[in-house]
Length: 442
Image 1: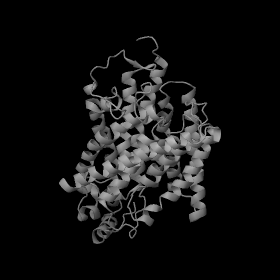
Image 2: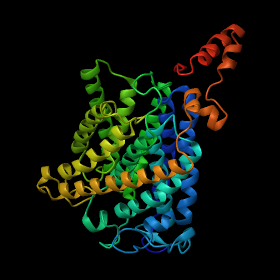
Image 3: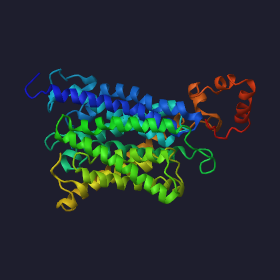
Image 4: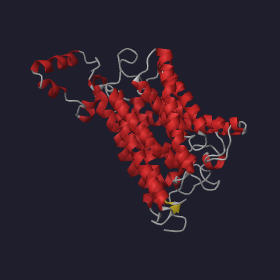
């Protein structure tokens, strides 16, 4: 390998890439537990299909568009690396091989569209969802990743490299991007049958907790790995990730107790994800005390934000907007207040003597990515809906999307009932058949 190569940094980045990959199955469990029984498998595979589609597109042209040499104005990469051609085994970026960097960034590209799936749970055609992923990463994620993550000495992406917008690990490129897209698809597909009328409680809180735990675990790779080296910045990002997430759990639960009178397990899991989202852009620029503040604010604010869907009438099934969009906005903007200038960035926030300049830059990044993602996602959703259709039929939605789209069910109730006798099977099955709209409580 050439001078400057570090085997330790390379091993660290590969491990972090694997941790980020685990986040997508973790997200599948998190979302899968939050839906009703009849949609469990569909929710799981909506995340897993992103692993398949995005991986192939990344090698074909995604990496080239996101991290190829700038094609002009910092908007998109060129096509030099189509099919990963032109990348040698000994080519390095920083202290790691380009192939290691590409593998790490691929995992970000995979989980971002998977996050969107929670906004349209229970009602999207699987084939249409797969087509949306392919189109969305091509015209939204890959360009935005170039804007935010591609650095080339001031001649890279127009947001991060040319205008100084700080996004250490994906607050804009991942979470605001996915949250705005989720809002757009909510409006395209419309409300679920029975929204605000029928109970739509999570069918398995243990699955939700398992998923949130895997996300928390994998997020250390997501954030610390974004240092692209096993160094002090990675260590600070690791600590900030932990304490911000912990603080967000406390903030969410405190809000729940004051507002609703109970500490819920769903609230604890959702609070953890809100904290992880909020600290993502800021973990490389704030101190641990700043991270705690960001976590507390995000936990309480996201807990309050999820009620907006009932007030404003959009059906964000699994709170993608309330957690990822709102959490991403909070974390990105608070960099403008809490950036110390002494972690991985030299820019200072308002509370550290930097004035409002960085806050203005962060606001620009939030607005640009949010508006671009919302508008293009809405157009893509409308195009798919008007051609092949995006939403399943009413009968399929009521009876269960798992059977209609995948010819499977998550739980074999008949096998359980058979062990107790035929009478035990007949009653629940008859009840489900007689009242199709009733929620199955597994």
